[in-house]
Amino acid sequence: MKKILIILFMFSFFNKVYATSNERAYDFKFIGIDGNIIKLSNYENKIIVVVNVASRCGYTPQYEDLQSLWSKYKKKGLVVIGVPTNNFRQEPGSNKEIKDFCETNFGISFPMTEKINVIGADAHPFYKWAKRDFGIGAIPKWNFHKIIIGKNGKVADTFSSITKPSSKRFLKVIEKLI
Image 1 (cartoon, one colour):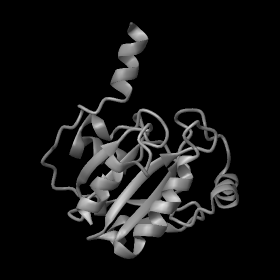
Image 2 (tube, rainbow, N blue to C red):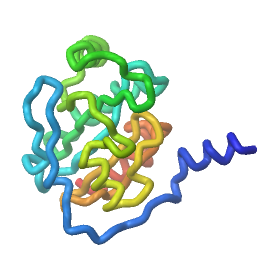
Image 3 (spheres, rainbow, N blue to C red):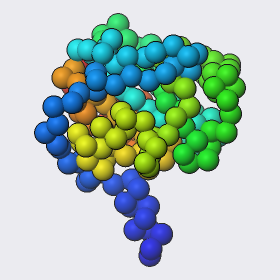
Image 4 (cartoon, helix red, strand yellow):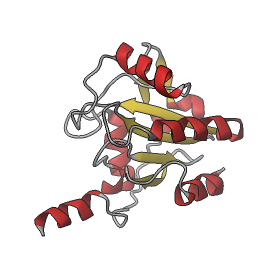
């Protein structure tokens, strides 16, 4: 019974709490997988999908859906950003190994950050902000957790790992925001 409750909590769809912070996603930046700076302010007035990713996860095939999403909607103002993390012990590789894996296996062309922490005290400031802005629904419970930032720079919605980027539910949110 305890395991069932933990699983339900991990993938809960009822954990959205909106905050009134004046901060916006555009206030944050990441170091890219190649060492470049990814400023979210460069994507102002666009829809941004931030996804923590890992190459040894059961959800890794979602890279294909993320690349398709990026290819289909980038001209309509959508940006996908992959955020490699080893917080769940499924991304042990270096930035170069991660980049090579993504390009070779999935043809990834959307921006990728360097490998960072997405949970805990050492989480990247973007993830701490997302929690403040949206509540516990923005905290990744596993790899391939999706945070959607609206054109206003605020968290519009979040999706757990089990929701594919190609799902009707996910695409309905994207279509509504675009």
